[in-house]
Image: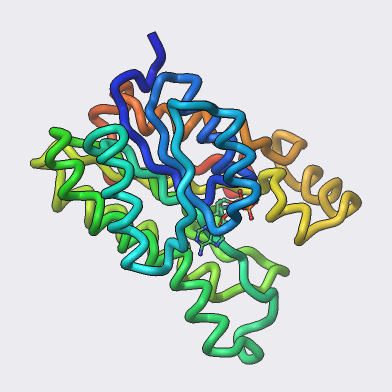
Length: 249
Ligand SMILES: NC(=O)c1ccc[n+]([C@@H]2O[C@H](COP(=O)([O-])OP(=O)(O)OC[C@H]3O[C@@H](n4cnc5c(N)ncnc54)[C@H](O)[C@@H]3O)[C@@H](O)[C@H]2O)c1
């Protein structure tokens, strides 16, 4: 029996990168999996690979009206939702704070933070109908420490705030058997990373990690499956750093 048998899950930003791997693992572990993204082509391609235990929906996480559509369509097809993985995220421009436009700051916050709030807000009634659930919010080590040499105050602000939002939701909804935890990846090889760093820079990054490599999407999926499953039933309001030891330095 799969570790996510009986679960109905929504994973955002899942057409590529970590989210796509989470979707693969969720289906493999028995979850009925709704995965969403703004990238329709890549989403439809993954849906063809994953088959009828999955449903792809085009979804801009920063639009509140899109959330109700996703939850209604997901419930109609598979039943009440008991797992939400708020994974979609963007980096934003890598410029120092005095050079950062307000519009760029707000855009990063809309996708990384406000969308996590919106997803949580709209999924809770469905989770209560399901008898409980698990919300997994993907933050970053940038939600734990500031990263020297990579200016990105919008990203840091949004990822720190996701951590606080997670803890507040955990204490508000524990009585409904709804858990909420945050995940804080370090360097993980995804299109987001390869867009920001070339192979030489990835080598340098690997050398700075105590485990001497960057993470792979599978590393993070192992953690997300655990947090989504009943194996983590007494874990809520916690943050999980997955960075090969980088922030332990
Ligand atoms: N890769 C890393 O090293 C790393 C490290 C720490 C945290 N993270 C976080 O992990 C998560 C996944 O990152 P990734 O590396 O897989 O990124 P990625 O860029 O490879 O994939 C992100 C996905 O989100 C989608 N997306 C972007 N804006 C969206 C929107 N408005 N609505 C819906 N979908 C949208 C993109 O289309 C894309 O498919 C993000 O929250 C990111 O901040 C990544």
